[in-house]
Length: 379
Ligand SMILES: [Zn+2]
Image (cartoon, rainbow, N blue to C red; front, side, top):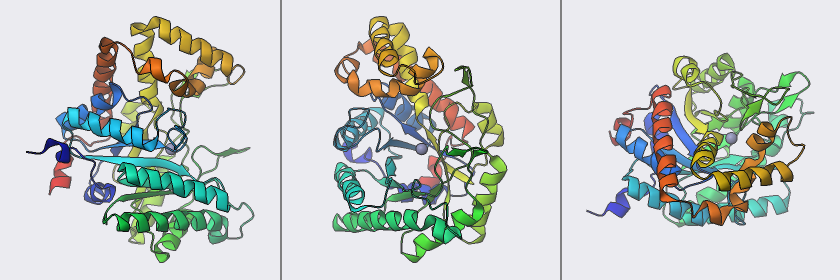
């Protein structure tokens, strides 16, 4: 039996189609730091027969290494090796936030180069995020979204073309209609059902058929803090609005469900009891895994942890109202800065990270109701 082949990532579309309206959320984990963490998550997925997506965003991982220090090729190779060690067979390798911040030729060209590298590295799912391009003066939804649509269609068509050239006809596609966490003077700017529906309908007309839609529904990326710089839980996700959007998509018979971004900090009990599984099909958990890394490091590798903390507090001084906030919001930049040291830590430390990641992944799978759901993919 060829074990290598069995543990390669599967098509995102295959997983998303199989689990649509199956009362579960698929966890997508951004593993900014791979040793221990990725294998712990993948092993938990295998042991509990839960679907899992490993993802990484453009800001985290690009051709220059992003803030993790991993290029798409490095990242894919390391994750594929971790999946093989874990014996995980039902997983997707997803390019999170392929951010297109403007529609100019240079930005589009740079984005295409990144996507090209992700395809060559073996990613099986892609999230095009041009949500920053939004016309606040637009007189209707179509006008508001015109720039986002144009960029999404251009990158989406390019992915189709390249995947076809490689003979791959099935892969995952996520698109983004509202910028996650964007606020104005009245608070969070939430996506409307009309914007969501218009966006998907226009994409479908252009022969772009995503399975997932990211919306702005009151979540924020990363750790969150109050006005005094004290870390707080996230309880701001607007569940009725999320349900309304999913319902609007369903009524139009669009095979698209919600991708919930920015879950870190949301109480698991709230997810378990109140999140609309099925309406939300994919749940992104990123910063949480970074917090696991620091929590283990501060006990197992005290010297290295203190060195990293000092560097973050000095380099990002003023970028937060307390030392904890400065560290919590900016320590992501330490992964590249301390790449070599972080990738040469004691194996006991790696084992502790793996155990923590394993246990936490099981908690997320239960809260997301995804335990045992790989059965649906096999059928
Ligand atoms: Zn996100």
